[in-house]
Image 1 (tube, rainbow, N blue to C red):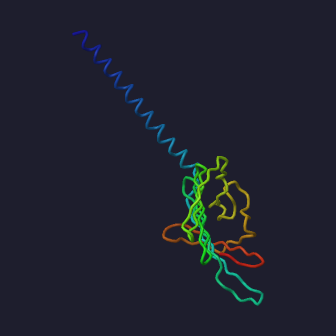
Image 2 (cartoon, helix red, strand yellow):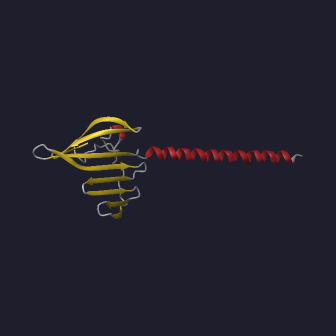
Image 3 (cartoon, rainbow, N blue to C red):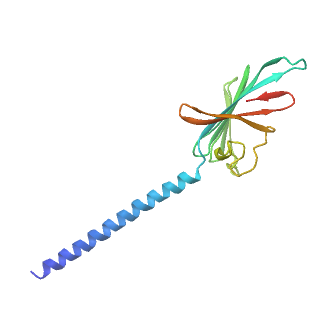
Length: 167
């Protein structure tokens, strides 16, 4: 009868170790998910439509651009100007797929040095990049307003060049 309590004690110790290991594993996985979620950019989509003015002040519809970023940092740039349409799909892995929608053709390249840090920062009303620098690739930009579309916060930005205005 003296052997039985010893086995019971060993069984309790083994179960305690198993529960502690399981709790540690779950905590580590939950903490890892929080770190991954905090380091990924928020997904967003930007649509820009240009209005082109001639020398007499007459306006006409210009090209339309779409820029979308997924939560993993992959992005799509789509340019449409009738009758042409093109998409550049850039994956985080460095793979880039260029699709010519007019001719139904595509080209794939691979860039190991891809920089994914230049997305728009939602905390600056999308006027700065995620690295904190002003987003000036298209000229000076002005925030026209903020609205919620289908439950998603969106910012309306306008930029003007000498020949066009895009919103």
